[in-house]
Length: 218
Image (cartoon, rainbow, N blue to C red; front, side, top):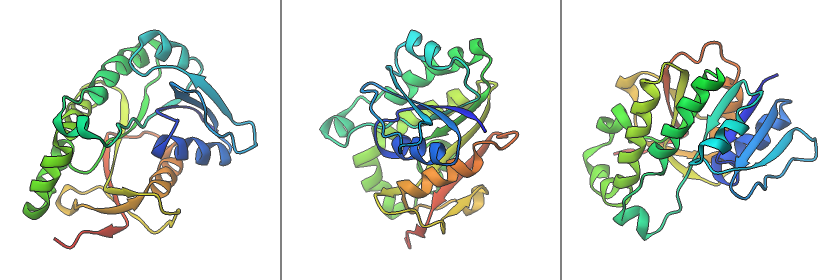
């Protein structure tokens, strides 16, 4: 079983991934500024107080780790629309050299559909509202992905579609082929399930997985 650092573990996909990985028997270090993540009662989660933007915090968090799951998020508010949004790229600029120095090579990064080279797969009808509401955040996620791709690490990008708080279904699609990329809907629980199923893939292999359960029919 792996020793996993989850960066951004206090809520959303990071929290769910921490719990699912621990339930599967992995040793999880759940890093967040609050340091509060439910341990599911099995003692497999180490709550770790730290800031993803602080190099010393990341350096301490990486001790003894096999794989990093980067699952950062920003609150949906006016700042996300008016910008600037820099969390994703700034945290990645801290994380990559720390991983290289610690000789931790495996990184699963949760970004989103519309970041990087899958932006061209957004339909014309979706593009205008997407850019108006999420454009600044996804511009920064694109920088995040570019940094990871150039890092020399063994990485995988996880790009969920529109997220819901629904339960795990196990019936989602992981689309790897660029010609088939399309937007859709998926629960955070299903994204966490995908991470759990691939946490020990050897190698991660620089793959880019678009995750959806229900496609948008536009």
